[in-house]
Image 1 (tube, rainbow, N blue to C red):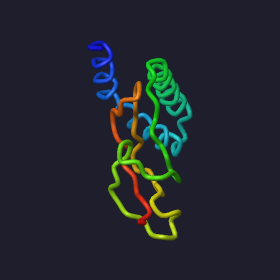
Image 2 (cartoon, one colour):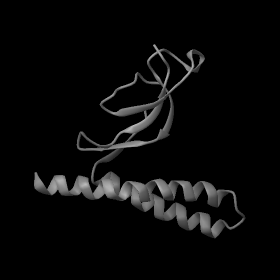
Image 3 (tube, rainbow, N blue to C red):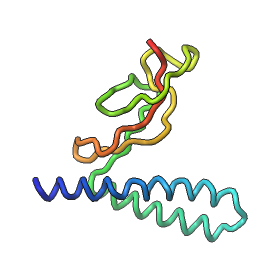
Length: 112
């Protein structure tokens, strides 16, 4: 149990690295340097594969009913954004590992 707690803590410390690599891929795609983009994508893919092997999964529930156990509502949408009580936009993906939430997703929710 202590090992799993340590693994979750370590994975949580690497989540900002994952976020920044995802941002870097977007920015690298806007440049003409395809080698840079390919290199960043390769590192991102390897990090995702390592996380997947440890059972880390993303919380990205756009269009689904808001769940405060998985998401933090940081903004309220408009009624035309979707069904009442659902997530209409994800600002930051959340992650869970072994059924334990490491980071709640930051979302925008349609008011009920």
